[in-house]
Image 1 (cartoon, rainbow over the protein chains, first blue to last red):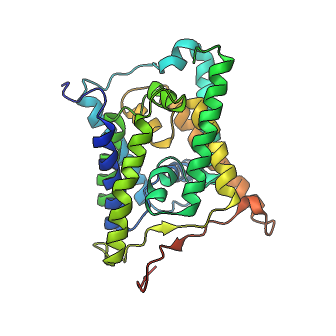
Image 2: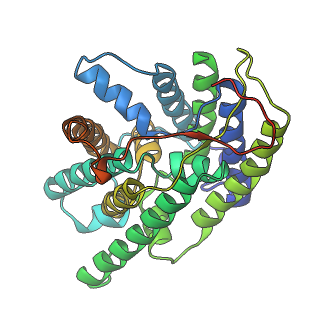
Length: 157
Length: 159
């Protein structure tokens, strides 16, 4: 099956993602954020009491939806691709780099009380001052660091 | 409640992959300002959700379980700035964030697994560090999560 376009246009995907935020508030009165789902996973892995079980269901749903979208694109296909970063960095180095990137963003997202979905989309949608500050900060930082990486790799990345 | 979150999660996951947000190159090009589509996507999501949330709040919308809907608002604090900058660093390195990392793995990208393992570890580490600092009173970098209600004239709340 290969019926989904390579990239759904932003003006279709964006408003629909906005409706996801509204739906989660309208149905269960919760802010849509993914980092807290990782927290539930961490609670399960470390065998601590799980708070907010709905976040685990949200996580499972997210995986199922992404799987479905891949299936409509002829996948899912097991692969070790990682775009331009994968083309430049050997696999043995890429795995620890990606783990570190994940670790730093997981720590930062909990510290700042939200990530790109929790603050960047949901929090700003409810006009929360904390979310505007966090979103402006992480976008500005990520752009600056990406330009730094671009310079340090001589434009390869 | 769990059925609702499963359904909304599925829609969100579908859209993440459909829009290509699970691709390193898409996020990297966004952060290099080579392509503005993802910024436009985020802005259009917010511009769709914000007026609808204001409207539902004004209507004093209740969830199927009878809870009054209250979009969360929190005052800006130092932890939003410091945590945001830390998150931005990790985001730039991995070229992905928590939702898209899971979408990567669900689509067969094995290298999403170390990112997800890192995310779980980072989240766990923060909770450990925060628990330690919480014993130190009034540390500004461990500001407590405070959620206040959306200011809406005369609306009653049940939170």
